[in-house]
Amino acid sequence: MLLLVTHQRDITMDFVVLEMRRRGVDFFRLNTELLPSMLCTFSDRVRDDWTLVSGTRTVHGSQVTGAYFRRPGKPQVSPDITDEAARRYAESEWASLLKSLYMRLEGRWLNSPTQIVLAEDKPRQLLHAHRLGFDVPAARITNDLQSVRQITDNHACIVKPLREALLTGENESIIFTTRLNDLASTDAGAIALAPIIVQQEIAKKYDVRVTVVGQRVFAVAIWSQVHSQTQVDWRRGAHTDLKHELIQLPARLEEQCIELTQSLGLRFGAIDLVCDHDDRYWFLEINPNGQWAWLENVAGAPIASAIVDELQGIGRP
Image (cartoon, rainbow, N blue to C red; front, side, top):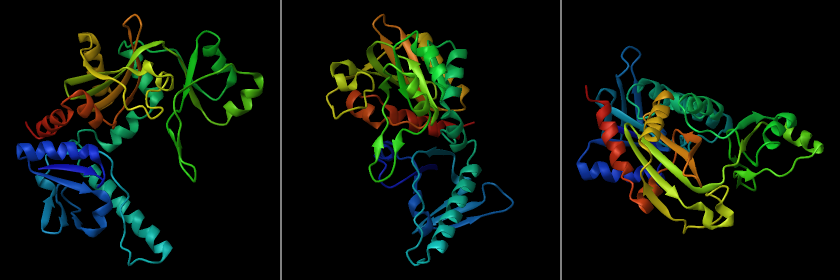
């Protein structure tokens, strides 16, 4: 049995479910927000001795041969718990049980939650990419204006978040990659407030999204330069007409993409590259749990099939 860990509205996981149903693969989709409505038992002696009972379905730990950690939701505790302190306590206990479940599945994940967290470290990604021979734009991770100027004095630059690209709150917004304008000494205080990534800007021919699944590589060119809004960050604006095209990367670059993914302890990775006007590819970053369903829709990349293949392969000797 394959275990799919996500939430009810995860459309990307729906692609995997459809592929599993097409093949007749036995699976259980664990929408984690519903976990408190299930009956759960974990043994204290045997790692695989655990059960989840959801309605008429019982999942035994010993049945699970592969697992996909996608976008788990926060467990929704019973509305019968009306005291706020008691609700927080129950939520914390369910979150702890989930973590215990995740650890019991080590060795069976497409990407384990632990490795995902470690791989999200962008400075670490850059170190790995350099070591593996990728072309990587010059960069600094800093909150020091003088360090920023070591890059901006020699290159046109962009700035992007180190980790969190979403501002939550009353006016939720996304922090996109943007061009860095001329800096004055008076900007030192603002820059000191939080670390940023300052990176040499590469004049793009197009963006490339590379999805690695095991030993398979799916590269899609995103022709982002046709709109001024999407030239620096193709996600910006409401343009749904950007051309997406399956392309073949150079063989050595494909190998590097696989090597990078594996070096971070992953079987799956969503890598962002850019291709410059000399057809040279530059590494930007890797998302260890990135989105991919739209690539299957608009470019025909058979990623869901590759993921199911990889999940089935985990349990094979």
